[in-house]
Length: 303
Image (cartoon, rainbow, N blue to C red; front, side, top):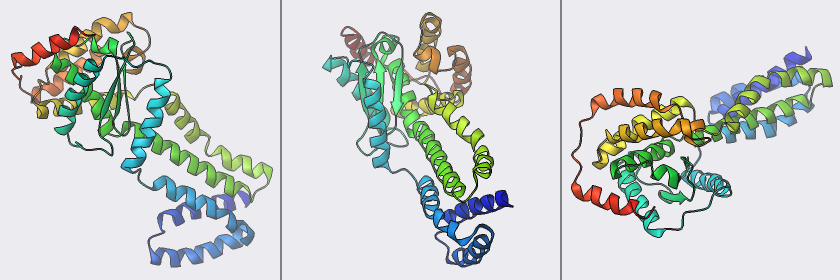
């Protein structure tokens, strides 16, 4: 009976959180609350306030401003392990390519725009956090054989941001926190043994979220999705989408020889190549202007 009252309270909290905008629902829930009060004891209903707030907050959309500041915090954390490459010419060039891609994408404007920082590391890696923050290592830039191949790298990271892959992890974490708040509020009305039974219902969800958060990279499906979106961005910006094959082939050669970085956070280059080649059936080869290769060659001399 006591376990039933815990789950009744738990269900009421979630129903209230999602029915806050409906007067009809609220009137109906008044009667339900009375019933639950009879089951649980009216004194336990006061524990629902924090639970409703937690669930309502978790369901609220993350604003562009929040995206930016979340991403900035993530980026600051990553910069604690790397030094920024000091060459202004390299940084300026990479950011110009990024801006061309972003302006021709489905989400050309962000709260404070897109920005790329080059990391002074020979490791082959890149990071994209919410709000437009992109970090690319010098080692990854050295894998590019053309500006179009460089554009493939940047378009992939822009795609992660626009698809909100990082934000989806944050939303998952917010739901976990909300669930734990509800569990805690509900448990306050139970005996120690009953509380253990209720909390056990959350174990699987909590473990799943923890596993996601300790992962150092996006899921394979998200990586494939970012590749597909990157091809769209490249084509819209006038870059040759087929240049992504050049980049992936270079990574295929280098991945087995490297530790960490792309080797541990991305699917094998062979698998990405297969999927990209299939996607490229929808794109024609684009002729690359000679001036584009000339400026890329000039850029590589500074790396």
